[in-house]
Length: 340
Image (tube, rainbow, N blue to C red):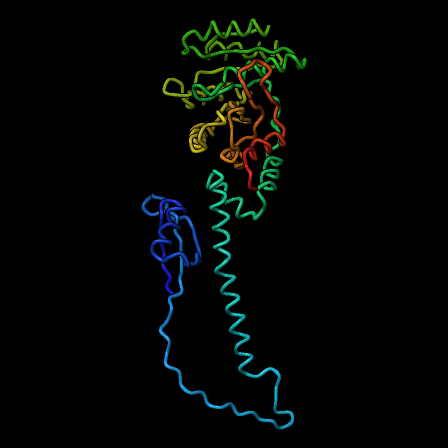
């Protein structure tokens, strides 16, 4: 048997190299992710049986059989040896097939576009995809409707639109007095657009800056039941570090991170690393109606990520808004999967 250790930039790349170097009949014995000089590889240990040249056979001697009474045993020493060898072969086959079966499952999960780090968790828990998603969404739960929320997100994520949708929903349900605030002084024409939407929905608004908001915060707490604050898009002009000092001064503020459901999961995780020190207790997903396959959204089940509170499913205000429960998230994540 020839055994070889092969690396590739991806699992598919590693399997292709195994096929090229060892042939179609190679058996995968083990696989893992390794990091070498800061670069991540997929490493596969594969083996293949190589045929041995037949040895010249010697004429067999006739077997002597003792026919005396009591001398014949139904389970001879040779039988015992063969039995033990068969047991050993079974254990070897089982040991070889286990990593190969795991590798097959991993490849299938990656083909569904599930993030690799979540595919590892699914395999570790050894559950069906449906059960994994249902249990994960149930653990996440539903966040509380915070009284004082700051909406943050990257430019173009639909942050301002979903803020207005949530504000109108709170008003329509009679949850109390609602105020919408904007500290986005960077967007050209933003003030006029903000005020027009406020008048259309008949919700009072305040266009201000952070200093004034901090000064007026005690009176706003007394006058309104819900205060929703819109911010500039995260970027060079407005960075997460700008919010750290504000959270120290206004400890009652909670943040809602607005993200596009169609954006690459790696991009979201990089953004999360930049803002995770803020008191973010919920996520709102926009462009949900554009999602064809829900598997890339499995990153939302990571323990470090806050639960999802709202879906935005279109441009209409306020109609295209869903207050999320765990089953809504399950349905979204399993969307477009024909093979579970």
